[in-house]
Image (tube, rainbow, N blue to C red):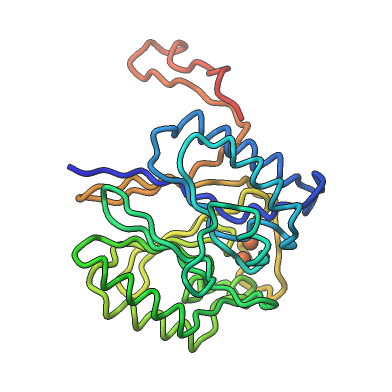
Length: 282
Ligand SMILES: [Fe+2]
Ligand SMILES: [Fe+2]
């Protein structure tokens, strides 16, 4: 049976010169993330960074990001998000591949199928967009994939999550409709995953299973009432996708969790069942 393992990292929001963002250091957190991936998933086929690489889209932040990801032991691709500057990203980060129109869109073939990485940004806007040229690229790619299972990764989801302060920066309604029409017509799309929302969330939209993952620096607090963006320092996560012809399993790993870990041996006598594992900590 064919297998593929994909690591999904998102929303690094790098700041130049080791600066803090929301009282947290995005560069040191990204370094910890990469070290954890290298330790635990050096067998993965691909790592995808699904956009918002730099908080302000500046060249220096992309240089910092490039230096960090140069330590990764597995192949990787980098996508664009609304906090990024497309030209700056492409000029510094080789793993941000552009299509023929200059959008940061590309495909990667893995044993289990084809990964399509989509560009959903418009300069100057935090909402998502997906114009005619990008729709054509997507339709061509889906057609070319034929019977191959296709996995779509994008920055903005083409639907809302019922959390007002997250949904205010969702995708433009007309573009989201056009994208969903393309998805509906395709018969080879298996799964979709995205960034932007800074939360671990999964579900089914139009019969398509999806997940999103937290950022590596800060998160969106789960407040269903506020219309102001509320960021939090809940632990960062990355996702591990274990894909075969039978299943797509997604794990979320809080790689900086410092809570104690225990070996639990329920078959041992009482008093000897729980042993603190000193070696496991972030
Ligand atoms: Fe973000
Ligand atoms: Fe974003």
